[in-house]
Length: 153
Image (cartoon, rainbow, N blue to C red; front, side, top):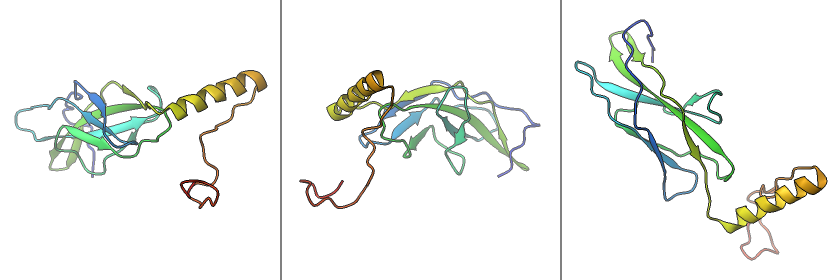
C-alpha cells in the first residue's frame, strides 16, 4: 500500500469513543463517518502507550466502516492506551492519508477485587522496602499445578 502525502489531505475523524467489550483484553473504537464528495473514505487506527509517544498502526488493510475492535489489549488493570485515527482515500497511485486525530485515552479497568488487593500490597511493599514487586505476574504461566484446586497456574 503506497501512501501519498503530496495530494489533498482529509481531516481526521471526530467523535472518537472507546468502550469495553464483554471479553477481557478487547476494546471497541467508534467514530463519526466522514463524508467527502467524490471520495470513498477509509480509516487507519493507531495505538500507543503515551499521548506523546510512538503510535503503531493496528489494522493491516484500510477500514471501510466506522468501528474497529482491538483484540490485543493487555489484561493489566494499570495500563493506559492512547488511540489516534486517520482518514484515507484511494487514488490511482495508492492511498492519501489525512491528518491524525488528537489522542484519545483508554484505561484498562477491572472490577476484580484480587487485582485491587494485589496492587495495594505492591504499594505497601514499595513504600516499606523501596522495591517494586509485580505480584500478579505468574512465573510459570500454563504449567500444571498438582496442588492447586484448578490444576493450572
